[in-house]
Image 1 (cartoon, rainbow, N blue to C red):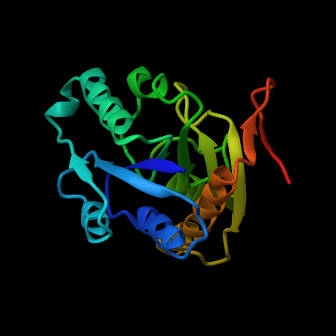
Image 2 (tube, helix red, strand yellow):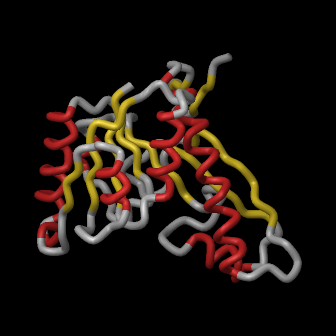
Length: 201
Protein backbone atom coordinates (compact mmCIF):
# COMPACT_ATOMS: atom_id res chain seq x y z
CA UNK A 1 0.00 0.00 0.00
CA UNK A 2 1.42 3.36 -1.01
CA UNK A 3 0.58 6.23 1.31
CA UNK A 4 1.20 9.95 1.44
CA UNK A 5 1.48 11.71 4.79
CA UNK A 6 0.49 15.28 5.67
CA UNK A 7 2.15 16.96 8.66
CA UNK A 8 2.45 20.37 10.29
CA UNK A 9 4.75 19.86 13.26
CA UNK A 10 7.04 17.45 15.04
CA UNK A 11 5.91 14.38 13.16
CA UNK A 12 5.68 11.94 16.07
CA UNK A 13 2.79 10.06 14.44
CA UNK A 14 4.77 10.03 11.20
CA UNK A 15 7.68 8.49 13.10
CA UNK A 16 5.40 5.85 14.62
CA UNK A 17 4.23 4.90 11.13
CA UNK A 18 7.79 4.87 9.74
CA UNK A 19 8.86 2.59 12.60
CA UNK A 20 5.90 0.24 12.13
CA UNK A 21 6.63 -0.06 8.40
CA UNK A 22 10.30 -0.67 9.16
CA UNK A 23 9.37 -3.41 11.61
CA UNK A 24 7.23 -5.13 8.98
CA UNK A 25 3.99 -4.50 10.86
CA UNK A 26 2.46 -2.28 8.16
CA UNK A 27 2.80 -3.56 4.60
CA UNK A 28 3.14 -0.10 3.13
CA UNK A 29 5.48 2.48 1.67
CA UNK A 30 5.37 6.21 2.36
CA UNK A 31 5.84 7.75 -1.07
CA UNK A 32 5.60 11.44 -0.13
CA UNK A 33 5.44 13.66 2.95
CA UNK A 34 3.94 17.14 2.63
CA UNK A 35 4.19 19.72 5.39
CA UNK A 36 2.16 22.89 5.80
CA UNK A 37 5.21 24.47 7.45
CA UNK A 38 8.78 24.53 6.12
CA UNK A 39 10.20 24.37 9.67
CA UNK A 40 8.27 21.27 10.74
CA UNK A 41 10.59 18.76 12.40
CA UNK A 42 8.62 15.99 10.76
CA UNK A 43 10.42 16.89 7.53
CA UNK A 44 13.70 15.94 9.21
CA UNK A 45 12.22 12.60 10.25
CA UNK A 46 11.08 11.93 6.68
CA UNK A 47 14.43 12.96 5.22
CA UNK A 48 16.28 10.64 7.59
CA UNK A 49 14.00 7.81 6.47
CA UNK A 50 14.70 8.55 2.81
CA UNK A 51 11.16 9.72 2.07
CA UNK A 52 10.56 12.49 -0.51
CA UNK A 53 9.31 15.69 1.11
CA UNK A 54 7.74 18.97 0.15
CA UNK A 55 6.76 21.95 2.28
CA UNK A 56 4.26 24.70 1.70
CA UNK A 57 4.22 28.04 3.48
CA UNK A 58 1.72 30.58 4.77
CA UNK A 59 1.76 32.54 1.49
CA UNK A 60 0.71 29.48 -0.51
CA UNK A 61 -2.28 28.95 1.79
CA UNK A 62 -3.54 32.47 1.02
CA UNK A 63 -5.54 30.62 -1.63
CA UNK A 64 -6.40 27.31 0.08
CA UNK A 65 -7.92 25.84 -3.07
CA UNK A 66 -4.75 26.49 -5.06
CA UNK A 67 -2.67 25.01 -2.24
CA UNK A 68 -4.86 21.91 -2.12
CA UNK A 69 -4.61 21.55 -5.89
CA UNK A 70 -0.83 21.45 -5.53
CA UNK A 71 -1.10 18.89 -2.71
CA UNK A 72 -3.47 16.64 -4.66
CA UNK A 73 -1.30 16.77 -7.76
CA UNK A 74 1.83 15.96 -5.77
CA UNK A 75 0.32 12.88 -4.13
CA UNK A 76 -1.22 11.64 -7.38
CA UNK A 77 2.13 11.94 -9.13
CA UNK A 78 3.80 10.10 -6.25
CA UNK A 79 1.38 7.20 -6.73
CA UNK A 80 -0.24 7.46 -3.29
CA UNK A 81 -3.27 5.26 -2.76
CA UNK A 82 -4.21 6.66 0.65
CA UNK A 83 -3.43 9.92 2.43
CA UNK A 84 -2.70 10.01 6.15
CA UNK A 85 -3.12 13.25 8.07
CA UNK A 86 -0.64 13.10 10.94
CA UNK A 87 -0.98 16.32 12.89
CA UNK A 88 -1.83 18.31 9.79
CA UNK A 89 -3.34 21.60 10.93
CA UNK A 90 -4.92 22.80 7.70
CA UNK A 91 -8.31 21.81 6.34
CA UNK A 92 -8.28 19.73 3.19
CA UNK A 93 -10.64 21.01 0.50
CA UNK A 94 -12.40 19.26 -2.36
CA UNK A 95 -9.32 19.32 -4.58
CA UNK A 96 -7.72 16.67 -2.36
CA UNK A 97 -10.86 14.94 -1.09
CA UNK A 98 -12.22 14.33 -4.60
CA UNK A 99 -8.85 13.07 -5.81
CA UNK A 100 -8.78 10.57 -2.92
CA UNK A 101 -12.45 9.78 -2.14
CA UNK A 102 -12.79 7.85 1.14
CA UNK A 103 -9.03 7.43 1.09
CA UNK A 104 -7.94 10.22 3.45
CA UNK A 105 -7.41 9.30 7.11
CA UNK A 106 -7.16 11.62 10.08
CA UNK A 107 -6.35 11.13 13.74
CA UNK A 108 -8.10 13.25 16.36
CA UNK A 109 -7.19 13.52 20.08
CA UNK A 110 -10.69 12.98 21.44
CA UNK A 111 -13.58 10.55 21.16
CA UNK A 112 -15.52 12.00 18.25
CA UNK A 113 -18.16 13.31 17.87
CA UNK A 114 -17.21 14.99 21.16
CA UNK A 115 -14.62 17.77 21.30
CA UNK A 116 -14.02 18.54 17.65
CA UNK A 117 -11.57 21.17 16.50
CA UNK A 118 -7.95 22.10 17.09
CA UNK A 119 -8.05 22.25 20.92
CA UNK A 120 -9.71 18.92 21.65
CA UNK A 121 -7.46 17.80 24.50
CA UNK A 122 -7.71 21.14 26.30
CA UNK A 123 -11.48 21.32 25.70
CA UNK A 124 -12.02 17.86 27.16
CA UNK A 125 -9.74 18.61 30.12
CA UNK A 126 -11.52 21.88 30.88
CA UNK A 127 -14.94 20.21 30.59
CA UNK A 128 -14.03 17.87 33.43
CA UNK A 129 -14.80 14.65 31.56
CA UNK A 130 -13.48 11.47 33.16
CA UNK A 131 -12.77 9.72 29.86
CA UNK A 132 -11.49 11.10 26.58
CA UNK A 133 -9.41 9.37 23.95
CA UNK A 134 -8.31 9.07 20.34
CA UNK A 135 -10.27 8.64 17.10
CA UNK A 136 -9.05 7.59 13.66
CA UNK A 137 -11.55 8.42 10.94
CA UNK A 138 -11.90 9.01 7.23
CA UNK A 139 -11.81 12.72 6.46
CA UNK A 140 -14.51 14.40 4.42
CA UNK A 141 -15.71 17.94 3.79
CA UNK A 142 -17.30 18.17 7.25
CA UNK A 143 -14.54 18.91 9.76
CA UNK A 144 -13.97 15.97 12.17
CA UNK A 145 -17.20 14.29 11.05
CA UNK A 146 -16.04 11.58 8.63
CA UNK A 147 -16.77 7.88 9.17
CA UNK A 148 -15.08 6.59 12.32
CA UNK A 149 -12.62 3.71 11.87
CA UNK A 150 -11.32 3.15 15.39
CA UNK A 151 -11.38 4.71 18.84
CA UNK A 152 -9.50 4.14 22.07
CA UNK A 153 -10.36 5.58 25.45
CA UNK A 154 -7.94 7.44 27.71
CA UNK A 155 -8.91 7.99 31.34
CA UNK A 156 -8.58 11.45 32.83
CA UNK A 157 -6.91 10.76 36.17
CA UNK A 158 -7.50 12.51 39.47
CA UNK A 159 -4.97 15.33 39.75
CA UNK A 160 -4.15 15.14 36.04
CA UNK A 161 -2.49 18.08 34.32
CA UNK A 162 -3.17 19.07 30.73
CA UNK A 163 0.41 18.19 29.80
CA UNK A 164 0.21 14.74 31.39
CA UNK A 165 -3.09 13.98 29.68
CA UNK A 166 -1.75 15.21 26.35
CA UNK A 167 1.29 12.95 26.67
CA UNK A 168 -0.85 9.87 27.35
CA UNK A 169 -3.12 10.68 24.43
CA UNK A 170 -0.12 10.99 22.12
CA UNK A 171 1.15 7.61 23.34
CA UNK A 172 -2.18 6.04 22.38
CA UNK A 173 -2.10 7.77 18.98
CA UNK A 174 1.29 6.22 18.24
CA UNK A 175 -0.20 2.75 18.76
CA UNK A 176 -3.68 3.19 17.27
CA UNK A 177 -2.68 4.80 13.96
CA UNK A 178 -0.28 1.99 12.99
CA UNK A 179 -2.94 -0.56 13.99
CA UNK A 180 -5.45 1.06 11.64
CA UNK A 181 -2.95 1.26 8.79
CA UNK A 182 -2.06 -2.40 9.36
CA UNK A 183 -5.74 -3.31 8.86
CA UNK A 184 -6.04 -1.00 5.87
CA UNK A 185 -3.02 -2.56 4.16
CA UNK A 186 -4.63 -5.96 4.66
CA UNK A 187 -7.78 -4.78 2.89
CA UNK A 188 -9.90 -5.32 5.98
CA UNK A 189 -11.42 -1.82 6.23
CA UNK A 190 -14.40 -0.77 4.12
CA UNK A 191 -17.21 1.77 4.18
CA UNK A 192 -20.70 0.36 3.78
CA UNK A 193 -23.72 1.90 2.12
CA UNK A 194 -24.69 3.08 5.58
CA UNK A 195 -21.50 5.19 5.54
CA UNK A 196 -20.26 3.29 8.57
CA UNK A 197 -16.84 1.66 8.64
CA UNK A 198 -16.73 -2.13 8.70
CA UNK A 199 -13.67 -4.18 9.65
CA UNK A 200 -13.51 -7.77 8.45
CA UNK A 201 -11.83 -10.62 10.32
